Length: 347
Image: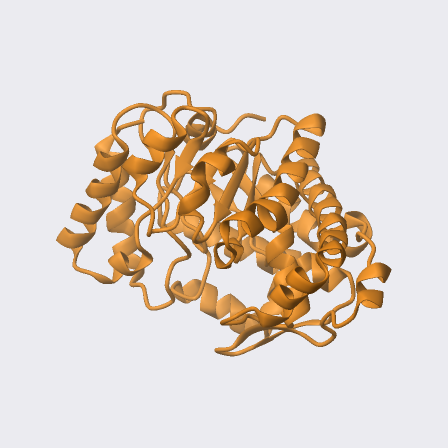
């Protein structure tokens, strides 16, 4: 069933729409009081992710507040390594960690791609529930972490400042890292196909840590596995694919050649320059600094217009933040940004 509001899908296909579509990374999150209530009901973040009824509820909450042009399924990028048995956990104010990080080659050799139906069914059930509740109003986005980003968490065991463990593996035993990335590429492909089959209209690959690599290493260890995933997805489905590499502004031309339909930009990239560099090969998504939503209403409107004006007229722009909504954000400030995007037209 086609969405009644197809602005996002039009933009992803670089087709005209009546206005620039807008949604936000982390649009369901701690800045919303209704989210915090459901999070408290769940008891912890992982239980919230793994309870489809609650995950569906928080997926829909931003759509009740704002006239957003897409929903994104509420989940986490680390569901695949959790399904592989690494023991995902979350500590308040510290983020995710793995109880059993990868520390030797034998652990990597033993990894197998999880069956999405058997090990990740709570995510696909959430997709089905959200799709049903949306009833065709707006498109639904599914997502996964990229192989490099997943590998970085799996080897480090948590977020890192310097990524010493994964980089040691990369420099000393690159063939072992590539073995890990190959398993993860197969896993991400199967996972995203399962989300499409459950009702996702498009999917996004979050390469959160691609920007910590040097140019050649990014192309080999981050972008090449993504290229494999996108090629496999396109052979099996016609759903649009968005790639977001945080800190990836140096490699936009290469990213545009990876087969995806759109590139997400973080706030350090100039969207007008990005459009000149990639031409009409891909749509662009982004890229307001999330901290701009902490400013005054006139400033938010002005900063939003700067992004829209920098992209210019014509199709192929999805307005978004350059990263996720900050938890300190006043929900009312989000409404100002969404209103300004839609008022501008520019679709």
